[in-house]
Image 1 (cartoon, rainbow, N blue to C red):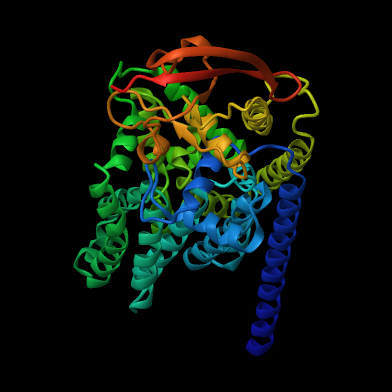
Image 2: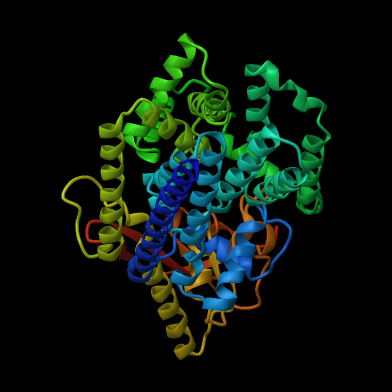
Length: 496
């Protein structure tokens, strides 16, 4: 009898796992097809990361190096199109969904793991992220792997979880410094769970952390050689230099989390937090809450003090996915869970249709969400037209100067086959971006072409003896938006 029950259990488990694999594969195919029909240009951060990938290094101005390495691997095997640059994203998010399954399976059972993995794969924030290439994509994978390995360390002996934890922690740090929040969450968990403080005497924990720290040392050396550029940028991003009370920014960030995690799941997380204040949670729930709630609270505080982007707490939703799904399944809240999946799948469809129609349809309400990723290639074409006109006159420009990081990044990508060098204008003080750090304009023997989004107000013009306006163009950024770009011929660089 027990053998029959065991066979039935195995068949049921295989059915769940088969459905999980099939759903992830279908979603992966849909997202790859969405990339293939995507009508947007590279966002300027994506173009910047691509440019980094041309010269693999252990660090870059604003981020650790892993994003550039991933793009280089993709473009070397696939090509230089927007599709190829973004291609790692859907694959990495699929792998993260598997890691989320592993966390849920260890802490609860395979059913919770399957549903949590699918919940992660269909999160609104993940659906958006799967269509772009950003540092959050590898960060989420290595955060999930580190958390899964940590859970395994908590549950039993063995050194392989510690090694996996260390590798994931180190790779996560090389993806984005936000991986360091893992230590804060771990500390919160140990404070909340005195029975687990024996981990502080476990050599595996320190070996894992030590391995992870060793893996970020090359990046620290790069920063030392470049006056700690990445750390300076991170501090600038926090923007603690002005007024430190922004309740509107805190409300904006907190409200955005309903969109990132999904309205039902985020509401569920708030309910679980309220319950935790009134009653003791099971150990598994407490662990997951420790690896989610503190991050949301800290970033909300950061938003209150200055500002915060909606994605800054993204890693919190790895643990939160498992926690909310496990709680809903335990409470038999199937209607809410199914409704949540319905909303998220609808979001997948909307995004696929949206990116395919980007630049051709005007949204019925609100601003065009794709406007920031449209029109950049046209700016590059307009710039190339100015260069060609000068060549035909027999007075070619020796250099293109830009006074704005987005324009620099986009021209470098969309003019990658043009022989005219592109240089960033660097004013006084320390560099403000990677281009000012690594390829600033330092002078030229011939006339230069200034491409500016601020026109005659550009500080670049004052550093040249002569400036000849070459016209302005309003470049469409979708049906209802545009960017005004001004062109100037500059000669007689005044060296400071």
